[in-house]
Length: 105
Image 1: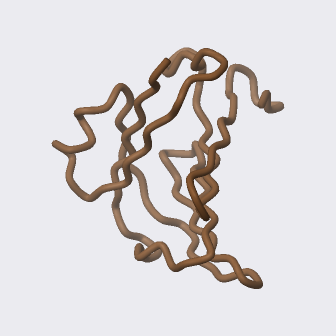
Image 2: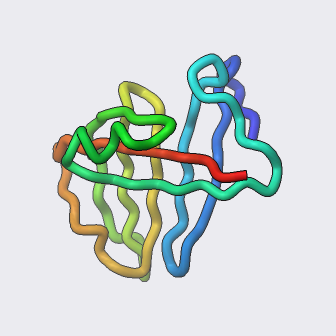
């Protein structure tokens, strides 16, 4: 999904009861091909993250419950990752996390 910020796009995905939105800069992460699958790993282990096509570290900036959903927002130095789930995600505000993403055609 194109954003109003030049060269930044947002990917959306879901797996079971979890919804995910990730912002990327097109000069850093080329947009995946239509129909590609996205593997996402959120970890505290840098070495695990480095196994992915894209790896970045950031901080949890929000962890709230809105109605029946839990919402976690992670900032990757300004680029946002939003996770929504019916169950608690298990990470806390100001936790340092690594986000690894791999695309499979």
